[in-house]
Image 1 (cartoon, one colour):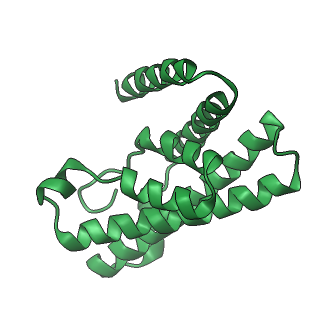
Image 2 (image 1 turned 90 degrees about the horizontal axis):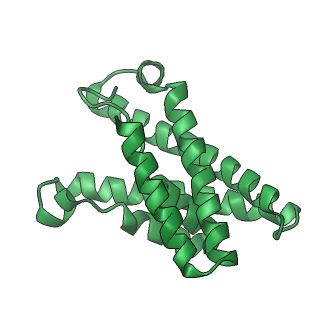
Length: 169
């Protein structure tokens, strides 16, 4: 928990990991950052420095994860489904760690508490499992997009939304 806020993972992360598979790092990091814009950002409800931090954080985490994916995928067969999903799982783990460390550092600086204390109170295995599960869905969505007609992508997208609703309940 960061202050009074709980840590949650959005199904948007599946879209982010799909972007990592579909685009080069320079493009996917920008798309990931822009796709995380919230209604509060658009309407001015959120403070400008929080908006700037969030865009920068997603740009940084997305860029690192996309670069890691590209490097790891290059060691294997890029057409191998298992290798692509495995590479994206590693990228999802890198995104998780970078995101967790950045947020914990900022909260520690803002609250005058040690980073270690923030990390110990916020890390949970269920959050990591959510990240890795959504990374698998993102990989699958990207692979379907590459290999199957666009109608199938719409179908998988509907399943992803249904899965998201099931996780919330």
